[in-house]
Image (cartoon, rainbow, N blue to C red; front, side, top):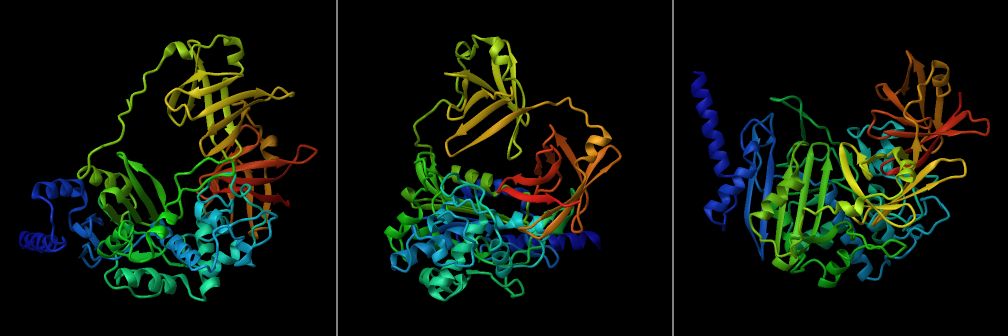
Length: 560
């Protein structure tokens, strides 16, 4: 009886698998290579992937692997609707581009012209800053999480607007750095609404999706709305089972596009044969951003703009809950590649480029990937001076590096990696394998050792710290207390207990704190992994800042 059931299940899945592929126009041998890439998820017991390959004006290959819904045994097909996460951003950006062409706004307009609710932080923030992730505005997801909102809670557009309207400072001066900020794209959706009187969902439906015939696509701004044929979101529970990864977003702009392989293929074609908008609009969408110092970014307007194998490419990834998505368009070849998944562990970036590599050859100028090390260039003449630069360093945002001297050569070590450094002028060093990364060492009058790290679109300052300072219980007690954030109206408590520091709140499980040096605390929370303590004139701790990832200088004051 059990064998009969297993045979039946296998037969049903085989039947479904034969019906989850569009009519293909590629050789069988190539289709088999694609199947091999996704074979891990080609069964009825796992979530999986949907893939698509576009050439010229056709979707030449599309297929689903695994299940859209494990509870009801519904397989993934090219028609399966996926939540696209940050792949959504290019549609929000394109809405702004279309409105700019209509003369309803300009990319260099101050955002306060359209968003009077956003606080005046004494800096001009433009629409272009939002589009390029150079605004300095703190990221909405981290702000919400710090305030106590879990990302699997219901999160509405109004909820995000309210928390953004209370920001009291920027991460940095607009245009000074690139730092990915989902907040900017929620604000762009609100600008679309302010200019047109329509929600982003309604505007994109009329201006983009209907002209392209994308009938199964929309911004899903109401989590209670029923959507037929949608994939559900999963994460791995253990080796053999999965659990639901809940997503209840009722917001749009940074995320929340619902679409499928068949529909998104039409958007791919719009990059090189525009139907919604014009070629000039596409050129505007993929124009690279620039920092105030003139450094050009690889990020354009809601989409990355660079090259792959010698060809121009426009691409973006996405990840929310268990959804992982990736899209890349190679306009010179009139091709596009898509991989969507409803399982958090799937690396859709890697799988997309494995798929691309089956179709295109490398035409880029050949560069020896194994850069040969010139040991003679790495020899340090003044070894005694170089010893001052060795040790452990930490940055304001919590990056931890070490510099080690071995055989008269200096090495940069971090997170299990080691890189040889070439000495330059005035205590400067460059990374042998990546000469665009530079370190400049200096010493303060108080004998503190500092190092400035530079790379193409950013920089940071690191300070040397002692690793052998053991804290007594009395010293740990200095960190203990109740800390309050006026911007987010939330509290956390640090407790000294059993020779350790514990971070606790009413919303989350407790987290042990790791003390690095005297000023840096590290937590287990993804939303505030690094805290930098603030001391008063009497050297007593009066607060801390959350300096981590997309949040900088978020102040908590010690009130007890």
